[in-house]
Image (cartoon, rainbow, N blue to C red; front, side, top):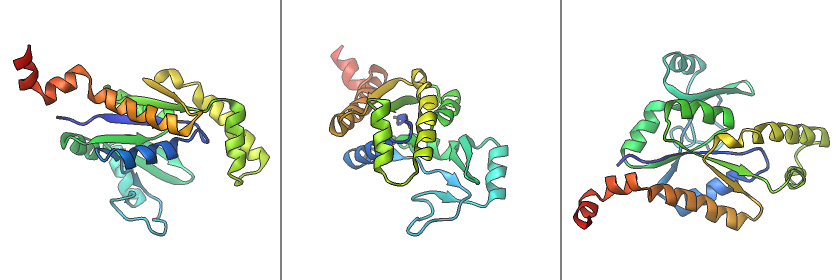
Length: 202
């Protein structure tokens, strides 16, 4: 049975990374997508585990050949999600999770219509601002720019299938796990997984 493809998007400060990490730790059947990138590996990163590290020329050739579900150019480096890798992993029955922005999500949905979109929202703009400030990494000018960018990102929430408001981290973790579980329990997937049993019962 083909695995599900989940897309998780959120503005900076909404808690997406923490929620995804918790889901991956709790549910070994969900695998995080491994992207291709042209940037150099950071200390401790392993090729094929954290990213597939490739030269710019190779990446651009893959992009030209339409090998990516989605791709982006960020801070001077290229990032892309391999169509073939996703297909191979899903054919093995693995559920795959993409942690990408709304633009990448839109690219993926054009090619994989059954992809499940999940958007993480903060409980308020003020809570988002406080979380960004609490990191202690940015000046107030940068934080306000991030808040402004977050507003633009959140305007795309209607493009997703599920919305989780991360007011309480533990509750939000349960909500994300519930989305994954509910998708697995849909009739079509249950028929595919338990065809003989269901036919015998009905």
